[in-house]
Image (cartoon, rainbow, N blue to C red; front, side, top):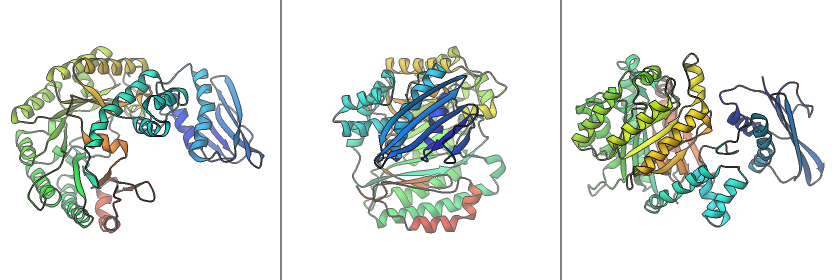
Length: 492
């Protein structure tokens, strides 16, 4: 097992994140602060030693695959925290590239929001071009990915310009699915086991929390900008339950004193086609929902079977066409590059078929290799190069057919160290997705697994996460709501 060795500092988390860019879905041992002596075997080491009152020496070494590389530099003793992370990565990243023979598309960036980082650099460095130069030179980001981030930044600007001041968005969590997809990394629970027990209790408490949040909004004179119902799969609720939920949101969250609704976007993650019916779609239409997702993940039936999704590609097409026929004018589709049993030919066919259907937006995700290791050890996995080819094909074809990238985020252990990108036709970009990923607007989470993110105030960004699992949410409901009642939402 490879060891991560840190002496004279506590920055081992960033060292682990950097190493996982090269060896995803791997467990490491740690040797932290015990001795400057290097461990046996394979290791990643960063030793910080005092040279004088105002100077430290940082020495980083990689021993891996039969090779050993070392680099050392003198640093000001004032270099700490994130700045020290950057200095450690600057020494270790070239070593890891040399030994592995890999040059990573996002360089030594380990965070999930590279576009947000580029935006900050644009302000700090005096313009987009200077920020792009920093991306390439300091962080070793490829020219292709730097240009992708810059293009997204430019598409997002009108969304930011149109964002109301002192506005917040709402996220409502329905953490239930009819069954669990094998690749899923979200908190979700099979509704077949909970339909007669936890689900009715959960909805009752969810209604109470909606009322509580509405009181916070009124008391602090906030404006609701967007509302997003996700999960799980919200359309796992039956039509009556869905109508109840939409009614509570309309009554307590969306209704203005003058009777007018000014919300910019109202999204429901309809998600799996095996949960969608005409009756449920009518409930969403009648409730004023402006955007839904109907998510194929793949248009290859053998890939869907391997992923544990009990529907066919044609089921997705049928439900998409039904939603269009009923009057939905903003529909998103999700796809995953790197699913087991998929091929470059199959993925290309999926993207081509999606483009032919012409949804307003298409999101291309990359599979989390950690989940793949857990569930697909015996199934054929596309290589890193194949996943990269899939992503490049999707980008090329979507750009050629009138879609533009508008938001991007990364996850740990992603196939080929790539990214998730949302593409949209002009005017159909999702404000919620942009604002949530940019950390530029407070998001009030409602329900199990939802996270409230408060932007501004003394702490900068404060996150308040509710219990991941519905049964724990129910047990601790009073405690959780007591904490939520005390929230003060910062104003910008």
